[in-house]
Image (cartoon, rainbow, N blue to C red; front, side):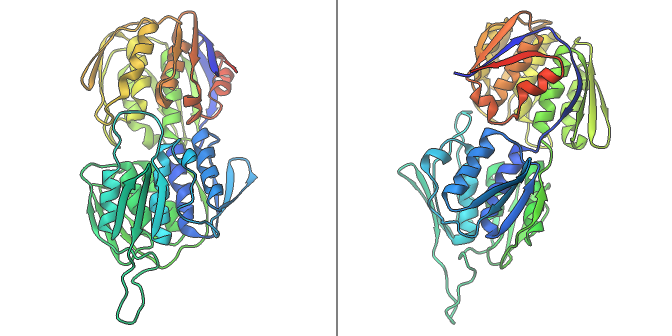
Length: 430
């Protein structure tokens, strides 16, 4: 079992480069299935979820090359729908995007039930609602999700669109990121206009729309709560660069806040980090914004705050565990309320092992900060919780040993190496 060993107490100083956003790269990689030609995608992060998604595409017939570092060439000309391996798609939540991509291109899809971090019930009812509004029939059975379209014909014998889907008005009951992405994918080549109301507004949805529009799609309103997709006949290949990862940047920002020091975090979009920056400043951390970088400076003395997670542009749920660690290190009582996922708090028992005083009541955790944590053996229960434990170990007295670190590698490239360059005493053990 892989482990991360940390000897806490070192301040972080230096410069760090942020990778492309995993949550943007995943839907764009699967969206390449819609294109049916070569796409060159730059700023691809080298993390496990991306590697699994590329392996899924290889197994359904895509030709994938790596012309240079952090760049992939995907040719989906010969993709065969309904052929993705169950053992691969079941490893990650993002494999649901293959449903929208296959349905949007071929009018049929069959994908195994997705996996990923366990945050309790993560239904895909809004995805299905969107597909059905566009004219598809969706059945979940035998561990698979099957979607298909009966292609309506005109009097002259012509089908309305190649995939048989038609435009529709789709109102999402919740602003689901996954459902918004899947409806966009399915509607891009559909006949007519699709309007998604109560759409999610995250930056990676804007990036997906940017990629598809570069390929010839007609998508307007991404980044707002109403997205309009005018179906086009076909797409073409393109060259596209993924946006930087705001959660990776936020994770390093909290690490500096926890340990003290001064770090320049480069290749970011400061606007995407506004809610994180605001909370750090409220805690007494200095954050200076530049055009494509930020500098974080901290003396390690933190003030308690109240944090409430919300869909973008609210405070991101993927920064929740990292900020809980900061509250443990603050001087006083803070609170964090989780409004997105039901089961985020599984990591709390691990922080208890390190001396944290945290009580959870429903969706709200009350944290009694005492300014320090103690090193201990702990385990990573999910991607962001694992990152939070790394931050806790960096700030703790003594040695912290983190097991099940494969969860961390799902979303962070070279986390240990980057932290070592900043002065952390951290290493990996196989």
